[in-house]
Length: 179
Image (cartoon, rainbow, N blue to C red; front, top):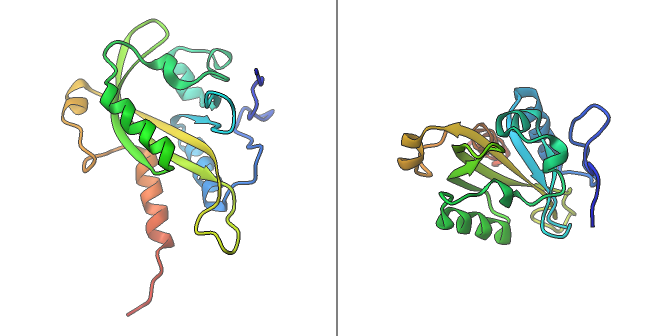
């Protein structure tokens, strides 16, 4: 099944096929506003393909958008990509939890690059009785890093814009009892 540029609007921005939770829509808009390197995938389609790749992601990896959309993110992996890191991502895909991991990936020309990878969900609005809405997409945000940062990476130290933004949103959503 091939879906051509499924979730891209005329303006080149992500146009979701599903209604998103308002905070998730704002989150995506902020990623565009900051010019971040990211992809959006659709877990409802076979093999969980990329349905949108930011211009920054395309430029950095040297792939044209048409080479990326409708493919699973595995094409970025290579011999130095850690199986343990990939398993952490697979677990997060199964559970729908946010994940942060250091990754070694590869550009179109075969050049290896290090990145701090943060993945989170984009959900539909929740119903009254639901704690959270249904997962509609996953967004993966890459931050180029150095080999040193990759080797010394821990979840406690992270500069990834997506994680910082998501953590800030969650903190703002916590009830404030004023006690």
